[in-house]
Image: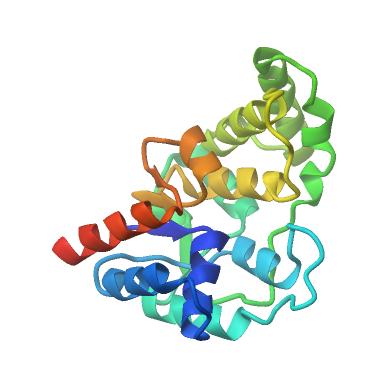
Length: 221
């Protein structure tokens, strides 16, 4: 089973390994997943660990050694390719070997610069207008054809931008690009409640009951 741990899941597993309280369920999940699932790290983990998106972080990078330990146990030696490579390879179809490679790249964060300002420019539009504009902008900024990455990214950005009831988060762009990269390939995306609601078919949120259910699921397989 191919699983992607977003930063919430991966960092809480790492915090458990560091002995921090309140993350015991994630520690149990880490143990239960070993030998049952393949969960590789990605350039998005590097970006969120070394250059946090959620505001000022005095201890940026302090989780890196523990994160390496988490993924050493779960990755099978695989790593997620940069989004640019994944999206370009989709022009020939969807193949898991186009998502993963053997090796590691803990010094190479995801590059979100092509999309800077895009989400802000969509705010105030209806969903349909935002979707059309997002797809046009993503293709223009990346030079990509209308592949699964571009379509999913445009859909996620449009949903985020056109929801008047939701307060934007600093990590929204990163979350959207991450999900657009990995979701077409994985069996499970372990993420937060918001992305789970946007991508309900193969996503699980990070609430305690959901994590405990995952532990039972992996333990029973």
